Structures are given as structure tokens and as C-alpha cells.
Length: 200
Image 1: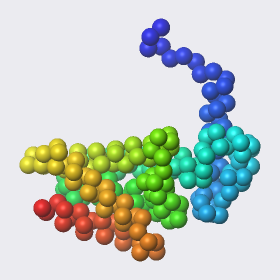
Image 2: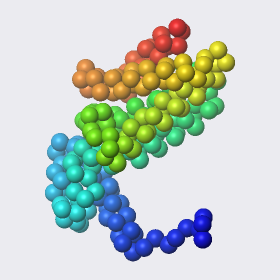
Image 3: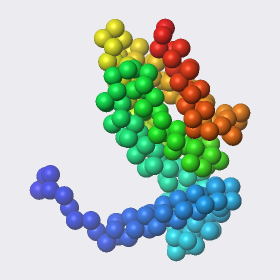
């Protein structure tokens, strides 16, 4: 029976339902109050599970935030990638990829900054951290694909430039001096830096 999908067992369905409840509860509470004002007990109560069960899915609030935000960031990246396909100008296409990611990050500024910190300093072997790093890699691949439209840009150079673009975006979103900055201001700053990179 190779290739045939096996029915999902009751135990796996129950695990998925708990994970969905945890994700929904954490998403709602983080959006309402920000990560610093929410306790794991409040998330467990809202998800109608015990804290011991909660810790089976995520050991810290940081991991819970990664769990919640990874899917949101992945959706933002897909929107940006789709938008970029129809934009011939390289800089505009790169910004089309970046824009929804920045908007996603700034929906709740404190949580967005904690997400970035967790992604960088968390354990890459932990599944939620690994998934966040995978999304970052996919963002860099999307940018590199745009840069490779120019026949004079090699794949290696495009990959290197995409990592620089990723670093510029990350620093613009995470920097303390930008805490009060609007999405428009952050995007304008990122665009200026990338424009310099692309003229070299």
C-alpha cells in the first residue's frame, strides 16, 4: 500500500485538536495583550488544558509565540512572493516580498520583536525555532529568485545579496530605535538600503 494515506488515529486527532486550541488561545491573548502581559497559565486556561499538557507542545512563551507566528509569517511570505511575480522592476519586486513580512511583524510590535529574538537565539533543534529559520531561508530564496532575473547576476551572488537583504530587514524590524516607527517608515528605510545594494 505504498502511496496510500493511512487514516489518522484518534490519538493523533486529539493531539492536533489540542495544538489547534493552544495556537488559537495564544494567538488571541498575544494579540490582545502582548507577550509580556500573558502567562502560560492563562493560555492553558483559555485552551482548556492543563499547563503540563501545554508544555508538551511548547516549553516557553517564546516557543508559543513562534508556534503562533510561524504560520502567519509563512502566509505573509506567500502573499509577497505572489505579488513579486507580476512586478518587473527588481527593487519593487524585492519590496513586494518584504512588505507583508514587515506588516506581519509590526501587527503587535513587542511580540514581533520577541519573535525575532526567539528565532535568532532559540535552539535551532526545537521544532518551532527550526520552522522559523526555515521561513527565513524561504524568504531569502524568494529574494534570490527575483535577483536572478537579471542574467548578469549569478546564483551565488543572488544568494549572498538575499542574505544581506534579510539582515537589513531583520535589523530594521528589531532595532530599538524603530520601536515607534510606522510600517511605512521601516519599509522606506529598508528600501533605501536595498537600493544601494542593488546598484553595486
